[in-house]
Image (cartoon, rainbow, N blue to C red; front, side, top):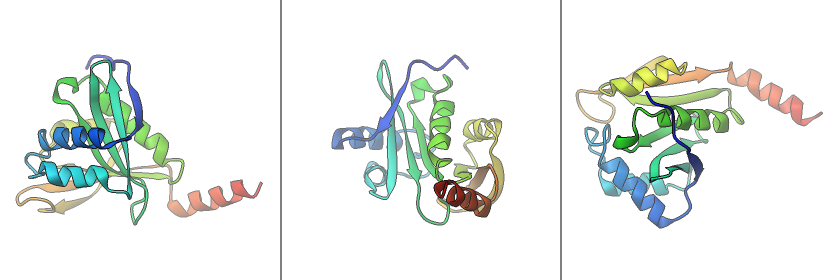
Length: 169
């Protein structure tokens, strides 16, 4: 892996960025194998319940990230997508670190799924400290599983109590 180039990560701002992200997702793995179309990808990127962040380097769109900060798994990294020609340069690690920084403001747990056939991504996530907590067999497409991963700083109840006590100081 070469060192990560200069990178900026900012919130998705407009329709053109959303369309570029949807095109990237629909044209790359693992989403090709998962049958993700451009239209479905665009709906995901435009979902108002999600936080979408764009990663740019000197060549433009390098990748993007979708976070879910509501629901049962607060702090769920829904999508990390890197341009194929930028993979292996540390951009995925940088996006995961950005996501963790954002999530850990509100939750002690970071969750994500990785497709059972996406071996490179799984190795990266395990190297970054994620542990397997479950397997969803045939969840998106027949014959493949989604592996649920978690990285934690502790139980949610302890974090909530600590957060409450810090707001009352």
